[in-house]
Image (cartoon, rainbow, N blue to C red; front, side):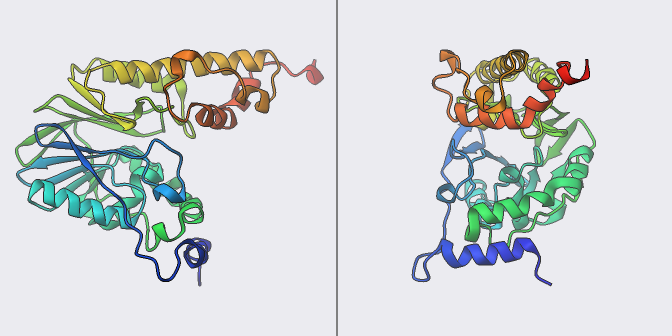
Length: 313
């Protein structure tokens, strides 16, 4: 029986790419950021055909046991290209893929890897089992042939200790939450590089489809206390300082929380709340209006529910 995802993918493939055109190819450009660490930047956009869903940052780390990846990208096609790029950078194939959270722009590329190499916390594995596959219809509908053959693979390696050695390289693993119910950050102890996943955004507005704002801010406090030297955010450019991106993410969340609460208190509807002014200090933050409007859709009902209903007095 053909399920809806495969049907959508097949239909989209018919129209997404002319028969005579070249196969779809991602452009993966590794940027060196520290000793044996590279950042492959995602587009500072929403998921769309023109970027193939490649909007998340991916980290490649060299070890004597092989390449380590933090996140895997949006599709099987991306994951296969990523595996080739990582192997060329490191001189050895990929041996470990850490997933930071459940969102498909970070996870669906794991289809290219052996489940035994894919690592996640128990909480994230539970989230992926419960919700991970549910993103497939939307991804196939948005991206069509970019997604051909993509099936999310559940991790076979459970992150259960605060530190892991891969070869001679030591990683501190931090199970946190707030952007989603199960977030993972990774600290490379050799270079002090913090790979923060979507707990940290930099010059790109944070997304909130599964956000818990108080828990997110608590996680940012924990990250800020690590004593790291630089931050690779889940989206946006490298932060070569310890705290600028963390502070910017916290500033946006604080403003968003207060602004939505104020809008609900003034009785604004969701359209009006999504059109509220954004402070000038966020003028350089990409996708700010888009993410504000998405956050209204995700979070505003809870803010409205804090106020008494006049028809129940």
